[in-house]
Length: 250
Length: 231
Image (cartoon, rainbow over all chains, first blue to last red; front, side, top):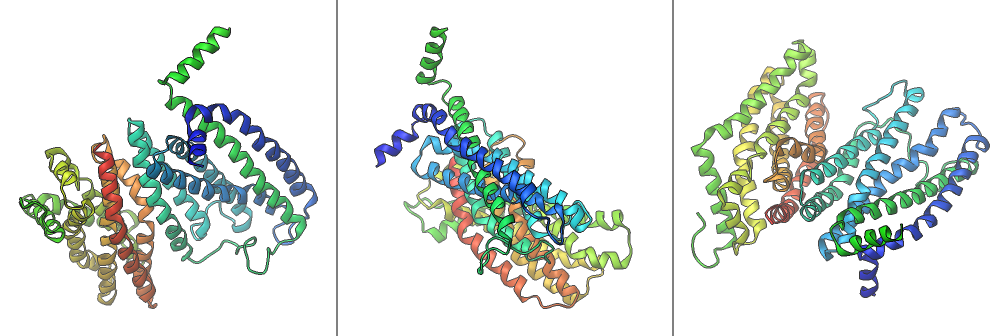
């Protein structure tokens, strides 16, 4: 078991494996996006209160979900890297951070566009979830800034891992303390005790889009990790051999 | 200052570290006073910027005082480990046989005594200028008392991560401010609620619980960060 994990986590092995992995994410991702976009924009009926404006949830909800998911992946792989000193997992954390920041930004932008017709303003401080997404964006910025400030990669990995773990303890607390504000955000629709409060014709496209975003995130993350691995290993023998043999073929 | 026995007791070593920092602060009072002046000055900026109407001052007082306290604490955090890093005493702490988290806790206690506690003490003076009634001022002091403990502890993690880096000031703020949001929200909102005649126990309980959480966990994160920064 351990041998298998170590083999999988060795940089050259992952570098060669990644291109084979990517299609397994891209193909289902693209198919699900095609279904989700068509069903969400054409098949789902307009909301009786929000009209067609509600359709932005098909981008907003998956982005918001991924902004949290990316942080979780980042924190867990940072912990693995810190505890078991697996080089690859630090590369995963480094690759996940900018993606997480982008999805957070996307969630903020779509939330703000949604807010314009719903609340009549582009930004509403009274909405706790939008505000905690904004703080989340700052947490990502802090993480990336710390990484960028330290030149030594190994040191940057460990220092940012400590920050990611401190953040992992704090992010739920931030979320709930912002929630303490009076809420404008509509209540939870998906995760409720008595099942989702949504018509299946609206719900299935949303679930499809969440899955699709997850798959595409996986594809992007795998590609980013591959690039990160190549950059980090640029002075090693296997990269030099690979480059030289590629030159020989031309 | 740590006594040269083979293994000094943990509490003794912690007290020695705290005492050393307190003595250093006593010899250089500017380090303690500057953040306090900064606190008073930031609080002065707001009435000048938004206008002196009584209603507005009463309304914005808790938020302004809390924001100013947060910024003043950040300002004082910069130098938490820097002098120890430069004169080599940090290396002595790292190789000491006493657990590093205990020494870090000693330093954080000294930091709170020289930055958080003075803020709590002068806050009523600044609060008077915001027309804050004395009953509310008591709650303000209590929230600041609990909140600055959390800020000192949280801040020590950021200070440890950025020690020895160039341009650490802006980075430290970027790392710590988002994490400090819960303290700011509960601190300022609790005071505003009291000012509008509400019950406050919940907010105070939260601040106390958060302080307990960070006092128990932050020294370990800070110690880990110091070891990484000094590799």
